[in-house]
Length: 288
Ligand code: NAP
Image (cartoon, rainbow, N blue to C red; front, side, top):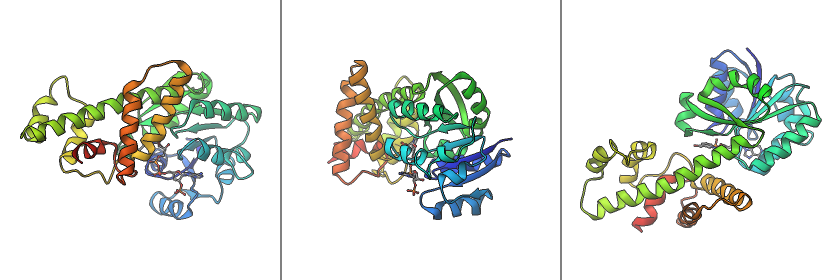
């Protein structure tokens, strides 16, 4: 069992940190808004600290799950940041979805301080975090990954090292690129069903068994039929992710025409007031 700090108790981090306690790890949490850390301690019984640096003191592993590149820099760097508190040889495992570039930048700073850094973005959403069945894509040194993997296992169904630091984030970009076009296709299919006078439930019952089936179809068709999106993975977060995918594609030469188009569709959903709606809200744009 390890001493673990967990930084960022949002939709994802709150349940992930809980699974660490359930597996017997000694957990100290930190959250920018202290009320969430208090609620977490009341539920799970670990400890909370007043800064990221204090939470990281004495920890073997520091996990983080915050917002974007700048948020991650803030949590890691500076006098109150995690790196200031970590002991030599400790491993920072970051679960935030960020650019590969910021993970390389932070890994280099960590290395200068004798710390290890593994990027480990996740897929599986809120339900995956709550049920401890996330897919975790990692980048880093093989030896650091080997140490971190049994800890990450507390909330993972699959965890894999994809390559050097940054490779986990590149794999997560593949995930978001695959989802973007798929959700638009699903939205168009269900929108067409409505226009054709068919029952979405009947259509999905049949076509989900064949080649058109997907996690999104299985888990989102019912709420899409009800035009309900007040849950799940927020459009604002998806736009952050697609922005990272598109700028990385600019660098590596990948052609992502559909991803670029769907990103603009999500911009329109934001304009409809849907920044916090689930990504399946692409269908709401078609129904306008
Ligand atoms: P969330 O519910 O909005 O929580 C964000 C967390 O990050 C909060 O604890 C927030 O603290 C903290 N935070 C943000 N900026 C910070 C800063 N500058 N300094 C310190 N703390 C900061 O988000 P989430 O849904 O858990 O997502 C977290 C990350 O996982 C994102 O990168 C997201 O893209 C990724 N992700 C999310 C999902 C999903 O389905 N939700 C799935 C896969 C990946 P406060 O409480 O103080 O605001």
